[in-house]
Image (tube, rainbow, N blue to C red; front, side):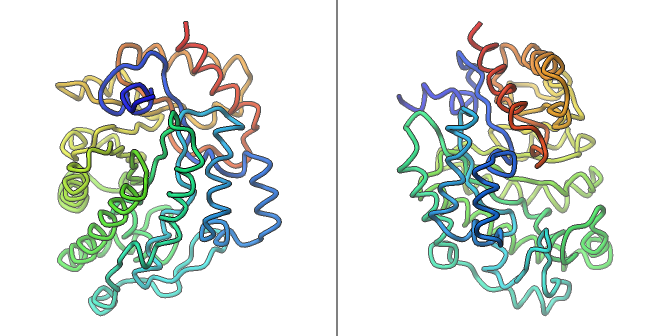
Length: 343
């Protein structure tokens, strides 16, 4: 099977495949019992991320157990940040031992050579690609610069990330210095993943909804464009997923991505009106639908599929699947999408 016959890659390139492809953000995780057993056995989640044999096993689990049409690399958004010198522990989410807040902190960030500093991730890519059938593409990913900045300046998770949002007002030049370094890190990391064997990459921008349109134009867009410009010559589709940022929708067409990931807060038909030409979309089922009845899951899936009919579309959730989501409901969703596409 050539890349032009793989539904996921067809949709990424703006074609309407015969069957709608589906994968699910966080598909390799706690919804799968074998993953829970591995996590219980090995304890620290960092062991799973940093051990290629374990990360490979976890990446492959959803292909067999759920029947999804693409695998996504099992790693973490913050993984490359340790290579910069931003050390963290999980408690349970990432907590950075020393937030990056001053000019001296930013100057101290180390240059990163992905093959040397993140070789364990790239070895996972190579191992997964060898194990996957040719018909199943592997997606690599990284956090977008603004989102990574919010984490390392705050020092961990936050609802509003006031530390970096304050920096863009108090010292915008300093904020740009940090975003500049993070952009190079992300572009280098994604290029290395592509060289190792991933066939598409996704930029996760989960904090970007905190920016106003003017702030997005200054502190997110130029860095996203730089990354996409570096990836474009590699002929590898780029998916951009901004969370809770539909007030910035008019800017998304300027990012340079091949596919736009939608959260559940916007209708696909509404999104289509924002683009003069065809933009492939990914999404956008509300993850909470998967707590519902079989009937409600099927109905909501059909509603989205009907809206996207005739449009390049990759079915996904509007964010990651929640850890306590019943496995049976996720499997039902995958089967429903495939059965609809076959009609």
